[in-house]
Length: 126
Image (cartoon, rainbow, N blue to C red; front, side, top):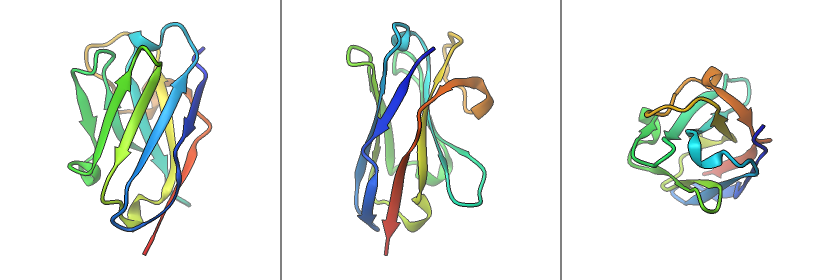
């Protein structure tokens, strides 16, 4: 099992930036895809971004393309989500997740991810 711990959330004004980090503890971190999801109040958890094990493939939901960047450092067992030009609608709890099946391309469905962090709150104010 991969234990994941997110950090970097907080309160930011619209147009500002935050960088989320997610540190894994398992020995297989570098082998699997990683994803970021978010859940706003009274809404379902939604896909934000995903990255393959070797960083060659990344996916983003349309609403964050051009603003968010996912990256990973396998030596540090860390995946990042750089969020720029944050908007009010980005307010949510952000979760990182780890796949447990080796794939060339990272999945975008929450059900494909097995291990989840506890979440970090991102609040964007006007």
